[in-house]
Length: 125
Image 1 (cartoon, rainbow, N blue to C red):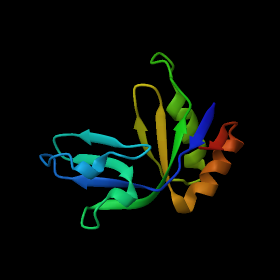
Image 2: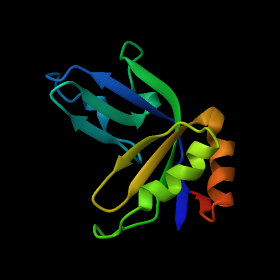
Image 3: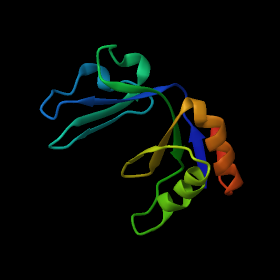
């Protein structure tokens, strides 16, 4: 399986559960907006996020080539194991077609090495 390293740096933002989705939330190569009863979580290009927004910045995004059929099991477990073994923290977002793995930029080289060591191909967008 192949991961593509997306361009840019991403932020993972936390807003209040009843907050409106801000206009800056989209407009990047990858964005994810999730609302629960406890929070509004947004992942997007960090350059779009206002400085006053509560956010973890400095993430890079790896996209697993998809689509991945819904009846396939263990896909995420398989790529998370080598990352966990390498002590790389992750933030995973799943979509209808595939999975996206965000890792801190300072751990990117280690993450790519761990994935390649586990047999994954990693290419740049």
